[in-house]
Length: 276
Image (tube, rainbow, N blue to C red; front, top):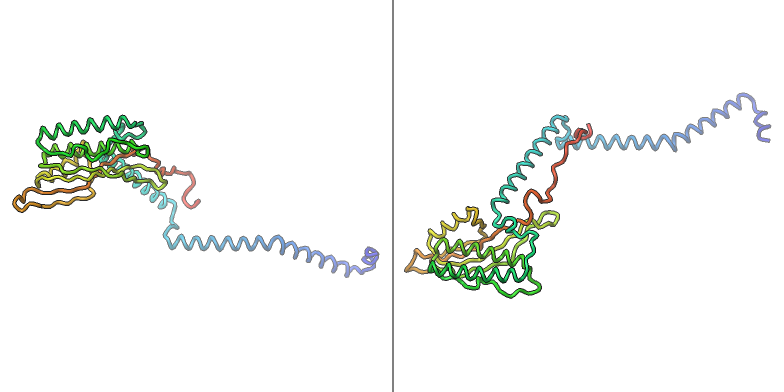
């Protein structure tokens, strides 16, 4: 019936109806399809504009050649710092592989035998030089199940190195030498790359002994770092005799510097900075 009614319309009415129907279709197509895409394009253009303005304010909106030059300079500086840090770590290490006991198993018997040997050797050396020395080195021969034997062994080696150095300097009296708990230094990812073994030492000696101590700590076989130092003249009748108390650390790098999980140098990409 609608078809019959449409046929009864005049030609002008039919043309008008087609125009209105086409206009409605165009409106619906624009509103539901083209208009959202137009809005998205405007938003993206605004974001790009804001980003360019921000980059311009931060002085990043520069030619590709300038950015590439900065990149090469930063990579060069990164390599220099890594090389300097690696050289410093090797120079400051008091223990080196396998002396650092990185992954080497150490048993309780190994520690006890080593402690007895060190005690006897140092006592014999001190008696030969006429310098009093604490026999037990403030280290317990008994090892509990909770003790880390590797830490105990490195504590002992720190005490042995420092006691040998004090005896070689021919100090008057070595009153006390006490190892302390190790201090762990970690990478940002939690990896322990360095252990510090502090040793508290007290002895009587001369100002020359103190100078010799500092000079010896720069030598490869006696590498230590000083944490605390106190020097006093306790005897007015003997001003040349000084009471020297210090906390000196031996450093053990658990991993060779070139094998640490440091951030890797980024590889050069064919795509330019900022994508252009």
